[in-house]
Length: 70
Image (cartoon, rainbow, N blue to C red; front, side, top):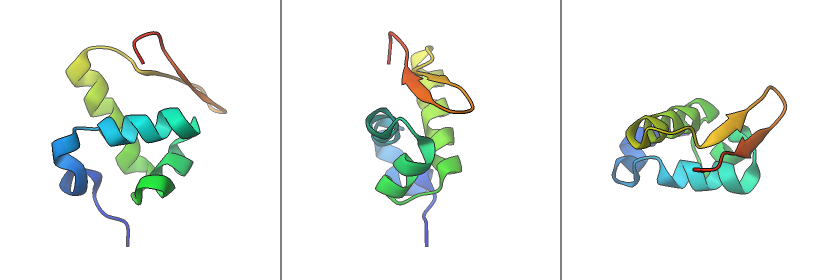
């Protein structure tokens, strides 16, 4: 069963999610890699972006790419 990302990785504050998405360039594959749902990865990345005050990814319906800060 997939775990809630915040509970499982709260101390990492989205860094593991960010690294997985950056590596796979895909939220679904990143989620499978870290063992959580794509929604949990998306929420963790959004929270990290909010904390940093910068978008880390350019998201389209077909791809995910890194921004300059990302």
